[in-house]
Length: 489
Ligand code: ADP
Ligand code: GLC
Image (cartoon, rainbow, N blue to C red; front, side, top):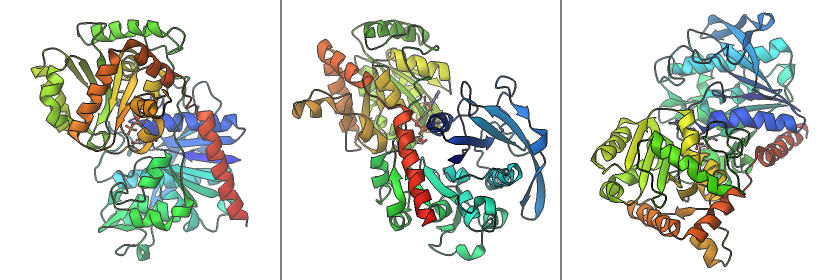
C-alpha cells in the first residue's frame, strides 16, 4: 500500500509531545511491513536543515495554494527519517512557520494549517503519487478527509484513497472564529448549531475530520471507549457515538532504538534486564546533575511532562506539605502553564532540598530521568496513550499512574496482580481523581521500594513488557485493509 502520513510534528525534526514520537516511528514500522510511506510535515524555522541534510526539491517547488482567493507559493524540502528509508516532505512557507512555537494561538493559526494541508494535497497531485491511505493526525491535519470528499472529489488520484484520522488528544480541537470557514474553503452550509463544522459557535477542524474520515482511531483501547462518554469526549460525545462503528483504539508503540537502556547513548550507564543493578549508576549521575544528595535507600521520583492540567497536576496542590516532607526525592522536568511551573518551583524552594524543578524542554535530561529515577509519576486527569510510562517500564523505573486511557492499558497494578495470585504487576495505579488517592498510591510504592526482592520483581515485570511498534503497526495495517475493503464494496 502507498500511505501518505501527515503530521504537524515528527521526531527528530520537530517535537512538543508524543505525537512527534509516533510520527517518527510508526511510518518506519509500516515500511517494515512492506508499505510505501511518505511523511508530510511543516518546515518550522527551528528545524536544523543542515544537521538532518534536508534539501530543497526544485522540481516540486512552487506549489500553488489558494487561501481565500489569494495565491501562496510553497516550496518543498526533502529528507529521510534518520537511519530509515522513509522519505519526509517538508512544506516550506517561512511567513507562516517562523515563530518560535509551532502552535502560536495567534490570528494566523488556522491559516497556517490550512495552507499546510492544502499544500500536501497539491504536492501529491504534482508528484502524481496515488495514495491508498491518507493517514492524518489531530486537528492540524483533520481538514484533509473533508477536502478529499468535497474539494478534491473529482480527482482521480484520490478516488480510491481511504482516510484515517488518528486522534492523539481530544483536548485540542482546532477551534476558530467564523472567518476560518472562508479561509479553509469549507462549505458554509456545514456551519449551523450542532452541524459538522460547528462547535459552540466556533469552527471546529477536528469535528469536521471526525465526520468526514472513512475511519477514526485513537491511541489506546480504553481512550477509544472513554471518547464515547461525557467526561472524556471534550464535548464531542454525540459525534463519536454517531461514528462508533468506525472508531478504533490502537495503543502506541515505543521506538526502542531511541528508548532502550541497553543502547541509549544519552545516559551515562547502559543496562539491561540481566544487568539491572547497573541502573544505580544512573541514579548517582541524576542526583549529582540535579544537586541532590544521593542515598541508595531514598527513592527518586521523576516527572517529565508538559505542565498542563491533562497531566493531573491539580492533584499535587493538596499534597504540598507531604511532598516537601517525604522521605523521598522528586525531580520535575517540564514546561507549560505558569501555575504549575510556579507550584513546583515553590515546592523546591520550601523543601529541605528533596525537590528539584527544571523548567524547560530537554531531551537529554528526559532520558537521564527515565534511567536514573526509581519511580515515574504520571497521575493524569486523562491520557489518550502516554509514552513516558511505557518508556519507564523499559528502564525499570516503576510507574505510578492514574488508571485512565493508555495508562490503564499499559501499567498493571502490583497489589491487584497479587490478589489474582499472579505477581505480574508492573507499577501502581489508582482510579479516583483525588489527591488522597494519589498520596495513598505513592505511599504504597514507597512501602514496596523498601522490600527489595518485590521491587526487583516489579521492575523486571515492566522491563519484560514489549510495546514495540511492530505489533501496533500490524494493527494499523489491519485497519487500513478494513477501510480499503469497505471502499471497494
Ligand atoms: P503528551 O504527548 O501528551 O505530551 P506523551 O507521554 O505521549 O505525552 O509524550 C510526551 C513526550 O514528550 C515524551 O517523549 C517525553 O519524554 C517528551 N517530553 C515531555 N516534556 C518534556 C520535557 N520538558 N523535556 C523533554 N522531553 C519532554
Ligand atoms: C497526545 C496524548 C498522549 C499520547 C500522544 C501520542 O499528546 O496526550 O497521551 O501518547 O498524543 O499519541
